[in-house]
Length: 267
Picture 1 (cartoon, rainbow, N blue to C red):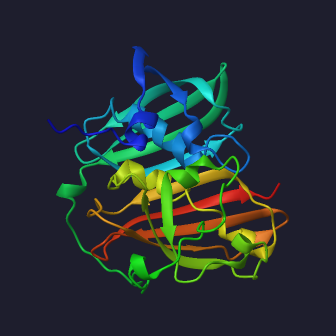
Picture 2 (spheres, rainbow, N blue to C red; picture 1 turned 120 degrees about the vertical axis):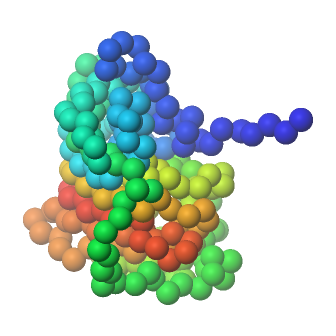
């Protein structure tokens, strides 16, 4: 008999309905950052998984998350509210709390991407990358990555590893690379909302120790095809300790599937 082990993403973003528009879950230790708190993209995905239980449209289209406090691990609650259900889109809000304190507040719109149709114009191409097997794992040879357990859940392959991975920041503020879940789970629209926040901030190559997300917005453009994802990340402005990070993802066929921008604070 063949058994299928549930993916870490599906297991750790799932929640249980415990009341009207209220869900319970555990913020898992498997998706932490260098600071030992829950990754922002992971917390966003937990909110979206709960919210889509309330909405008939199957696919995430857009989400905006504001982060109020660090995501301390352990039991948490998600409260949802549906604002409107329309023919093509539906919108709702989700609030993640820990010990009755708000951690993240999310506003999201869902649709059916399989039914999307209309004029299309794309002015940017997917990154040209060597095959993943010909690229470098930035964690190879580094051993443990401390409290950043998310590095065990998502893997990356890069043509060239930024200097900050070796303790020698090189002054770059952009990178192209491959990514995927390490357990082989293919991405879907909600998973893309996690993956746009899964990589180490590219601004670290400017010599800063890291950053904390203040706000993250993600737009899903298509359902992704199976396989490795091509990624492009860049930061153009670091001003008074705040920086933006733009993150684009193309699937294995070269189709753009996700875009995001976040505003983050240097500690």
